[in-house]
Length: 258
Image (cartoon, rainbow, N blue to C red):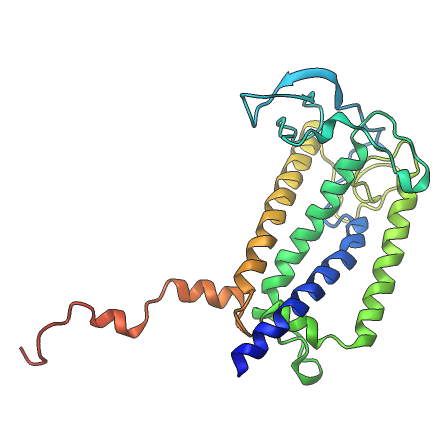
């Protein structure tokens, strides 16, 4: 039956979604929406030490996090902040900071923001494409619509971006998430950003909050679309505010005309 076919194909579609999200990781190298500081970025300060500090997020615990990182509220229940790894895949032993962890958080958060937008945007507007390839409302179904040549292009583009990003990590003065955009000497600033240090730190806080929210949001979107067929999330949400026809008859006990 059609329902059994959908169920049998669901694991394969989910696996393809995971592959697509992994390939999308290098897109963080562009740092869309990143607003730079007035001067060239400085080296990442140490944010974890042997000392213990009260946790704001978990008041009954302590944490090695000292609060110097933007958005740090002491949330580290698994104790990752006890370690300060470097880019070990390029021979970097680390500089005592949590630079790699913050880089990973920003990278995944920016990808999640783009993924949340891409998850619902086809319901608003999309290219026609061959065989309506861009018109799939459910992203799980959209993965099957991408031709092999398209996957090769995506893979090549993302690998190139990832190589570029990893090479930037070798610079000891590299600031996590910095892609060379925004204000400052030698940086590309097409929108003419000119924040004060206080304003810039506030923008950084806004970004990290949006990153964390998007990482949770994309999980919710994926769960909502799982097994929904060719129905988009926006349509599902819209239907949540309407009631089936039979509910309007609930409590109708009198014959018509009375």
